[in-house]
Amino acid sequence: MRTEIARLAAHNDPALAASASTQKKCRAIALAQQMQGWFETLGYRFEKYEVWEDNYFEWIIDIPARRHRYDRILVRGIEGEAGLGDVMALRQSVEK
Image (tube, rainbow, N blue to C red):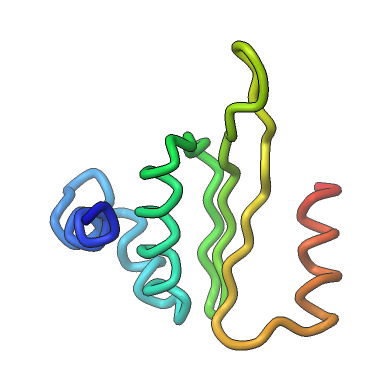
């Protein structure tokens, strides 16, 4: 249900209009919509960091770890099968 809500929000929310054209260029948009619903269901928070490219997207999410503490996770969703180049690009993003 949250996945469907995320999909509808991406199309109808005026606040997302600026990034909507960027998101539509990303071939991994369906994956992003599914993952957003899953992460929201699990109670994870999304930071403002977003990258939308042709074949991948990146987010930073906060996962509850301990009392009042969170682990920050960089999520990179790609269209298709991940290769060594994708792993190296993810490493660069983490270091950045």
